[in-house]
Image (cartoon, rainbow, N blue to C red; front, side, top):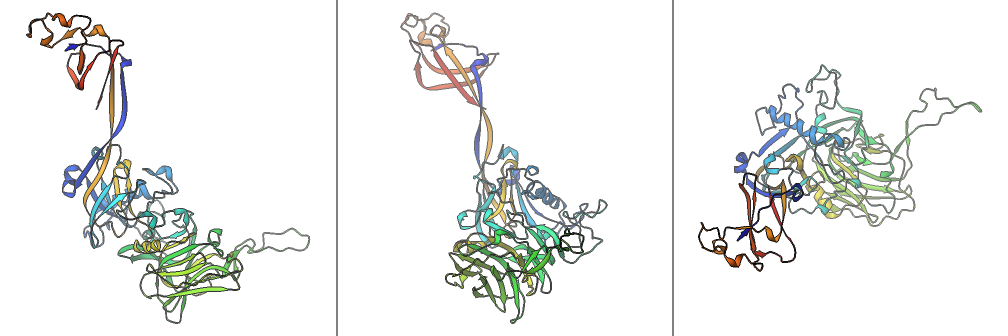
Length: 556
């Protein structure tokens, strides 16, 4: 075996970075030694100094200050106003596909940087959980940062937020359960602390400029509504309470809600209706009343003045007789109506009073249908309107045009879609409570996963699988060997006397026809210490016509 020794120049050396993915499969017993931390956190309205009410109701009887603080950190870094302040939130955001919804309680899974590396590889996280009355199930991520139950078909839900033209959870309504306590959405003055009692105590929401949770940020005007927790399909969500006398919500007229003949749309909500068999309560409608700015009048040939009392102020007046939708309840029935002003189509279905029921009203190919708790009933046949059903009325929730039929009860998860949901989508929206397949998020770069769905956050995590992304550098060395540079051998078979002490080369190895083979390549430092050694798969003979370039690549 002949040898050639070459000293590299900077032109002979290259370095290429690339990502390598390492698979991890860790059971809960391995979490401590792997430094994986699991935190169960809750929002608290307590003073920012003490967080004295940081315990989870009935789950952790002792106050947990650290976990309360973690909730606020989580909210600030990933969830709070992420739709409006994209640049101020940490982590990857895909505006249309990344759903971030944080409720009162959450579970945080923190994976150390040594395991996740640069980030968790998207679509590789797999969490195995148990609890909440379910046998063990697993959650996977969709590569956009959303966690959902393995085996679910995402197309069996409406995940296009642009089709959801109205969405009132209210997602963060729990922050207003106690309207007389200062929270992080109300600034009383710098000398007050979150969790302290307000000076100007109030008992209901009135004309607060709250925006909904939809893609369109509809402005909601509340009048004497309050918020409270509601149990939907085993999970606690926020609900809106109506007093049955003069409360309600209205959204100003918008063409998004102008559903004319031939247009498909879906209305879904949870409702707890409490009234007598003879009473009628309106749940949601776009009829009866519109808001206008009345014209001002002046003497003939005189300029119009705007100084008159009430000039250029809004005024509620009767709307046109046609309407695109009304959903109301009389006795133990729920009704869904549409009208072009001359003809009115109405269908009905039985409704249980005094408890939360999921109601879906759908128009598809001019067919009206009501679904109660995901089950369809009340098909009308085809509409035969001769005129449009759109009007300039506002959308009213909890009353009929602010004129009467006030709702006594609660509503939650109010949604209007400008498309007809399929039967399986209606059923799944009922089953998931909030119309979404997603139960949490993954923040790949931060090594954090969260469970935020009210029905899943308290489940136990039994196993975690994921791939960590680790940056590796490929080092490349190019060594060009000329024929005459094979000037030394350690192989005793090429020596005249075949022993280690003989330095004389045998005659067969000195002629011009002798061509050595390359079998081993070594890399040494300046002190002559071997750093890397590589064996070729089979001996390679040197070329008779050109120089031979050996390329050595190794990773670190």
